[in-house]
Length: 182
Image (spheres, rainbow, N blue to C red):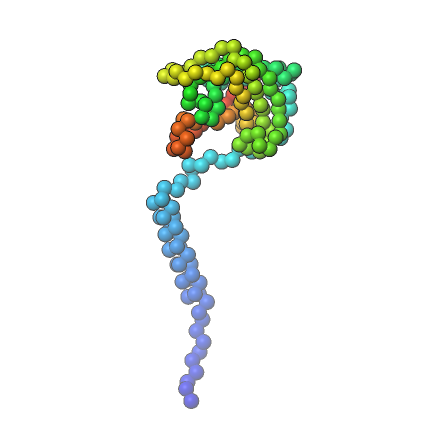
């Protein structure tokens, strides 16, 4: 008759092995992500959608760089001064001025983000200019779709995206932000 052995406690040893394996796999995954160039800071956090903007927040004078000014009036009319094109059109370097029309919309396909958007249409430019180093002919009419967001003080900002226009995906992108005069 064989001698019976007392059962060994296997619990702590198994837990140690599992924890050691998890640590090793975690270090391996972190190393692989680092080698492939993954950077959690590269992406921008999503902008919360604005659903509560009202006309009184839009009406007024909005400004951006290099003399850009857009005046939105309560009757839906607008006055545009030196507003750049959005997305790939920004790279063309033209800037438009003239009277336009605007409206606040919640169309789902209006822009890149959810929530409200502001559509601005310039049916016939009365003035054009170009940024330094560009000579592209400006269009006679143009329309913009502005995304809406709130800053840290909960004030409304209007913006659209612009890029270098190469279409390769490797170009730099940014946001063209208009801020309302106080």
